[in-house]
Amino acid sequence: MNPVVFIAKLLRKSGKTELSLWVLLSGMRLMPGSVPLFREYFINRMATRDFDAIINMCTLLSRKNANTESMKNLATKFLARASLENDVPAEIFLSLRNKYRTTTSECLALLSGGGISEARKSFVEVLRLAGIPDAAKDSWCLAFDSFLPTTDSGSNDTSNLQSDPSVSKLVVSGMYWSGSGAIYDYLREFDQVAAIPGELRLWKEGDFCLNSLASRLKNGCEFQQALQRFLTIAVLGTGPVYNWQEEMAADYGLRAARNDTDGRYAQACRRFLESVHSLDSKKSCAENAFAECATQLTDDLTRMWGGTGKDLILYDNIVHIGNIEAVRFLGDATVFCAIRDPRSNFVTRWYENPRFHRDVNRYISYYRDTLKHFELILSIYSEVSSKVKKVSFEHFIASEEYRDELAITCGLDLARRKKGRYFKPKLSGKNIINYQTFPDQGAIRKIEVELGQYCTSLPCGEIHGQ
Image (cartoon, rainbow, N blue to C red; front, side, top):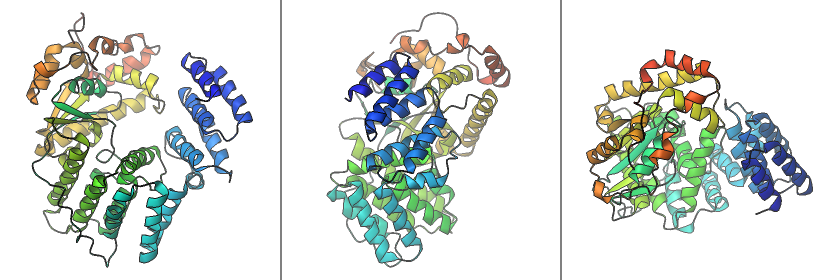
């Protein structure tokens, strides 16, 4: 590790962020092209919520022609995270694009303009620039060919991706800092469970996820454009980004694509794109057919990532309570939705989420609207409500009996749990009433008045068991 970064990181973690900043700025003057120094600088400013400093630094970097690909990547990531309202001028993102994002943008422009052969050549170049494994390139090209009007891309064999039987899944969901991580840690202590790390974005949010695709199904032109974004951002991760949701989705997608050394990930994504491309959106059954295609994709990816020998595959926050409709695309799944006392949720987000707006009135509206939408969807879609289990974070932490009842309902054997390996209820217990010592008790009282129906009261006493 760079010694300047090491010293700055130690100072930041000890609470001396301004001294750490001085060390970093001094180091950056001596090593102006050091990516590790800039990364620590951005982390330092995120820790102090100095978003203007991050945006200003990224704006400065966007004007330099000598930036490396690594520096452009770094600046784009933090620029996206630093804008709470996603309102950074598009030209700054444009000037910070690396080669494969620039080429992807050119490829899509050629495709929309009718330059079919040029678009395909450009897409092949995208794969090369992004470092996609050779074993996956043919499948990605065939997936891209499904957008071309003269190409029959369905002729190649994908029979190695079987659709039956459906894969049994456990899915943990929340609404940002709602305690879903504790549920995830508890469930992965069972040896029947294979846990897939990372909050994958395919099902979750943005105008390129499965939920968004389904909503555009009836509009042919919009659906076509959304499919292209799904390919380039959500599953391949090479598309141009303009905000933090897109950047996070692209980050996950690119990581999956670069790790696809046997080509199975590309094949699964290709099959999905080809199947939904052939749907007749005018038919009354189109939405159900899309859900079947999306479920097929989910099962294909789950088999690939989950491996074999486990009864259940565990996903962490691949759906959000505010977009619980996505449960329709998960197939055989039990979804644990963490509901947290709004007071402790507000305080935790205040301290731990650099992007949190800290406006109590805005938070109250967000919390209320999210849960109202959640309950509405459960009342509309029986296929969603039948899979969802609402979990009180407070009761989950406080009661071993409550936790174990939830485990039994989804087929877990309590004797096969390695207690204490990941889940620490006594450590998590301090988060139940963190609002009692929050400096702004006026904000807490306002939450109690406006969101009283969601506030949780627990009897005094110790947290029960591991």
